[in-house]
Length: 450
Ligand code: NDP
Ligand code: 2IT
Image (tube, rainbow, N blue to C red):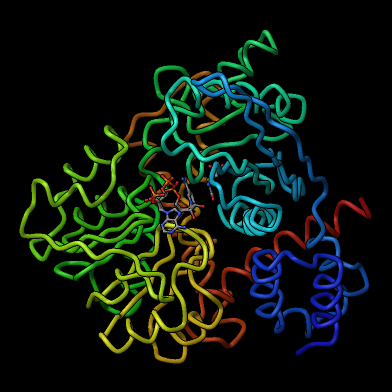
C-alpha cells in the first residue's frame, strides 16, 4: 500500500479507537485511492487525506422527553458536520437503538463523497439519536422530535446544515422536527430540512428517489454489459423507504422481485411480491413483514437466526439489492449469492456489504454498484427540494424524476470513466471514490488551509 495512505489509516485507527464502522468506511475509500495518490504528491503535501478524514465539527447533546406513562427518558443526540467544502452540511438523521458515534461518523464520511458525486452544491453530514421509534406512540415521537430540535435548531439552517430522513426518520418525524424549528425561529425557512411532506414544502418524488435512483443506476450498469432488468429475479433486503421504492421501480422495469425483509426475517413469494400489500403493512400500519403471510398464505417466511447470513441472501437471485442497513451482507452471504449465480449487486443502504464481501464479488465477476454512487438519488433529490424551496416554485413529479434519472446516469458514467482511467475495469467502488475525491481535493486546494 502507498506509504501516505497507510500512515493516514494507522493514525486514524489510533485516534478513533472503538469506532469500527468509521474505520471500515475510511479504509474502503482510502485504499481505493491508491492510483491517484501515488501519481501525484500534491495530496500528501497539502495533508488532503488528514483533513478529509477529520470532521469539521461534532455536536452531541442530551435529549430529554417524557413518555406516555409520565416516565422521564433520556437519549443522546448527534450531528456530525463532516464537510462544508462544496455546500452546506447535508445528510440524514437516523433514529435507531444502534446509533453511536462510530455509526454517525461513517455515515457522515460516506455522505461527503456521495454528495460530491451528485454534482450538486451540498457538503456532508449525518445525525440522529439512539432513540427507537418502534413501538412508540405518535405523541411520544412528537415529544422526542420537539426535544431533539430544541437543541439542534441552533446548529442548522438552510445555508448552514440541512438534515433529512434516514432509518427511523420519515415524513412523520420530519414534520414534527420542522414544526418545532419554525416555532423556535419564528420564520418559515423551507429549505432547512428535506423530505418534507408535499403539503408544506416537500418535493414530489423525494419519497421514491433513493429506490428509483438505485434502479436507474443498476439499469445503466447492466446496459454496459448488454443485460436488461426484464424478467430478472431480484431480492431486496429491508422493507422501508429505500426498499419499497427500489421494488416499485424494479417491477416497472419488468423484473420479478421475490423477496423482501425486515429486522426479524424475510418473506419469499415465488409469484412476485405484492407491493401494495407491503406498503399497507409498512407505510400505513407500521407492522412486521411476517404479516404478509396473512393475505398471501402460499408465501414463505424465514426468521433471522443470527448465524452471520441474513436468510434473504440464501434465496437464489439474479440481482441482490441490500436496502436495510450496514454490514448486512457478509462474506459468507456473498459466497452463497455467487454459488447461486448472482449477476449484479446494488447497494441501496449505506455500507451494507463488508469489504470482504465486495472483494469476493469483484473476484467473481459480479457487477457491483457501490452505495455512495447507487443510493445518491435520495440526497440529490433533497438538493432539488432545496432549490425548489429557494425558488418558491414546484416542479411536477415527472420533472423531478427526469432530473433524478439524468443525475444517476451521470453518476454511473463518472464512476465508469474514473475506473477505466485508473486501469480498473468495472470497479465502480474505486471509480466512485476516485471521481468524488478528485472534486473534493480540488475544492480543498482552492480554499486554503481551513
Ligand atoms: P427505513 O427506516 O425506512 O427502513 C429501514 C429498513 O431496514 C426496515 O425494513 C428495517 O426493518 C430494516 N433494518 C433496519 N435495521 C436493520 C437491521 N439491523 N437488520 C435488518 N434489517 C434492518 O430506512 P430507509 O429505507 O430510509 O434506509 C435504509 C438504508 O438506506 C439505510 O442504510 C440508510 O442509511 C440508506 N439510505 C437511505 C436514504 C433515504 O433517502 N432514506 C438515502 C440513501 C441511503 P425494521 O422495520 O424491522 O427495523
Ligand atoms: O444516506 C443518505 O443519503 C440519506 N439518508 C439522505 C440524505 C438527504 O439529505 O436526503
